[in-house]
Image (cartoon, rainbow, N blue to C red; front, side, top):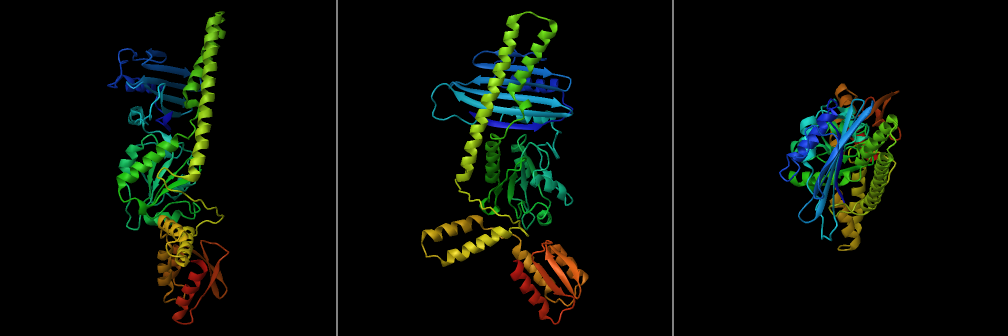
Length: 464
């Protein structure tokens, strides 16, 4: 049973010899190993140990790339076998490392433990940090965006960074605070995910249109996947204790990574296949007629291919199970309902706010203590999020309260709210977020003091 899986870039300057030595150090420095004296310092290939504990090293190198790693197996006192595979692949200035942990037992057991995150993940990050995962640096510290990083935020949210690791994106609430401790979470997710923090509450409003309303805001936290399959959101109203939220995020990341497909070059079966193929080529080049050697390497290559088939079949089964599970229930026991729409939010929380408003009306009109009312009230409570509607309306009302002409300050405020202003003869044409379906005409000169508030009332009915 696979219990842990991740892949992440390390510093491209790292040599394969340094990577292999790190794998060796991880094993021989363990207080629970008996192999400390068996594994040589310059190990590249070879199997060491016995049926209770073994370390199998492999190495492959060509003119264009190289791979290396170890499969470490250990059977504990309960006859439960733990298998950790650590593979590195280097090519054209990139160095990608992968770690997998599996557990199984030949004897019937009530429950198999998940196991801790392998220590080798922390060790690799300590020794070889500094790599780049697409546009994002690989580090165990959070990435704090600046006010000018709107393009980078767009790439993160729209899955355009070219990364292999997911991103935990933390937004700020109205007091500019966060609902988690980014430095702590970054340590927990080291080698598994990036932690990105937005600079201000205003920043989320600025990027909203760029990312088609897919960004979180108001203190919420989201996990964005590198393949763009969607996001997982944690709302601030449900998480009052940072440590609980961080534990939930770390658990979600770890479980979800089990369904992420590793690069073919970062698997043990690929390493075995390539080393066997290289040895076969060397045999042919030498003109050897030793049939037994040919058979041995052919068998290893076939075994590696069989193992790769089994790995892909297991991933397919996990993917099918995950898809079925995600349609029903989350790990916290909360059922999710997904609504399809072709519209994007024109402001933060627009569509969710409209839905909850409609649910409130429906709940108020339903019979007390009925199933219908209970379901509706639960939906409202679970999805309550004020968004930007009230803030926009307050600013809009103040901007138009004493409107008699479009002064520089009024124009600046309207544009900051999200209106695009066009000259239209004796009038101005206002388009909110430049959406031409909802034009609003504003006179260049107001007739009296009530004109501005009347305009506000009409805008509110049309857009909000």
